[in-house]
Amino acid sequence: MQIQENFSLRELNSFGIEATAKYFASFAEVEDLEDLLSAVQLSSIVNQQMLVLGGGSNILLTRNFDGWVLKNEILGIQELHEDDAYVYVKVGAGENWHSFVQYSIDNGWAGLENLSLIPGNVGASPMQNIGAYGVDLRDVFWDLEAYHLQDKMVHTFTEEDCEFGYRESVFKNKYKGQFVILNVTFRLHKKPVFHTSYGAISEELQKMGIKELSIRAISQAVINIRRSKLPDPAQVGNAGSFFKNPTVTREYFEELKLEYPEIVGYSLPGDQVKLAAGWMIEKCGWKGWRKGDAGCHEKQALVLVNYGEAKGSEIYSLSQEIIESVEFRFGVILEREVNII
Ligand code: FAD
Ligand code: EPU
Image (cartoon, rainbow, N blue to C red):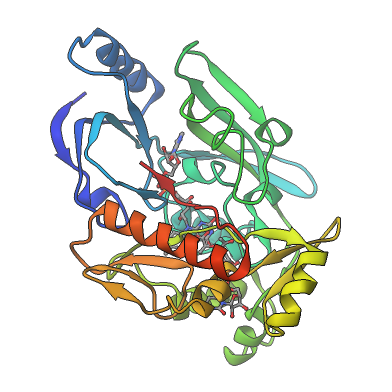
């Protein structure tokens, strides 16, 4: 176990923000984690702030972290068992998400293809119930094991226990900071159920000249669409959508529509409508906006970017200005999706 002091996190967050961790260590097994936690408790000089880090693709570091950053590097992919319809696969939290998606496709296991190319690690996937192109993590989730930092026990969470919602779970709200997710078990289809109705998937499949649908073709279509509009963190720092798409009543949506006939919204059950935050932000004039190295992506206004040397606090201030202008113009308050540290 190696503990490093005043450790730079720049390479470990997809925004590429320069910030340090007072103490940094990684763990590859639950026993390493327990050793680390003893070290944290025995140390008299630290306050007990702790951040569990995966791939760092959904955080904004707004300051140096005056505590412990523990990087989860638990690996392993294990096929547990199968029945007529499904295969159950347990995956270590430190496995890269997209590599696992590719591994499942190689094995002919279906269900993850629409979630291709989402950055980050498997352990963070339940945190906000990652979703894209008509599929949420919840659709393929079976259960997970998580270590409780106070009672020091490993707990199992079923889908119901996780209380998944749109970009939400118990780990992001009521149990925030209490559990370290160790592994996730997925229930994947042996026979694929294709989801091609969302967004531009069908159009992209056609463009690709696909005659026979397959999970690999869908995965490639999703990859192509994502590459066409989302910035690659290796080129431009970002954490994907910075805000959630907000929900309003149908009545309010109709009111907005009178003034903005082209407003983008998707019907939800219970007379609710989900608004496209990216459309509203663009309408407020932010798309492609840049001040210093902090900006709003030129192809997707929902994504805030660091062109190089932006500070986390500058990105945060920009997000605040965007929230205020969207509220002023549309009467809707945007909520940040990215975890602010
Ligand atoms: P991190 O950023 O390391 O951590 C995120 C949060 O989870 C932090 O609060 C951290 O403390 C906590 N955490 C991480 N691992 C653990 C663990 N093992 N136990 C307990 N807590 C933990 N998200 C989507 O849902 N859909 C998308 O389409 C999407 N597209 C994206 C596109 C781009 C270009 C980028 C940069 C991001 C995108 N995201 C998307 C966001 C991001 O990829 C996901 O939220 C991803 O799951 C984050 O994983 P991570 O390992 O990087 O998490
Ligand atoms: N739009 C604009 N201007 C913009 C951006 C979007 O008008 O600058 C419009 C688009 O034209 C479209 C609508 O808004 O009509 C929705 O845009 P898009 O399909 O790009 O999706 P999104 O709602 O902006 C969400 C997720 C993404 C996910 C995609 C695909 C959230 C917060 N974001 O984005 O997730 O990949 O759908 O399913 O729900 C992430 O969470 O980090 C993320 C990238």
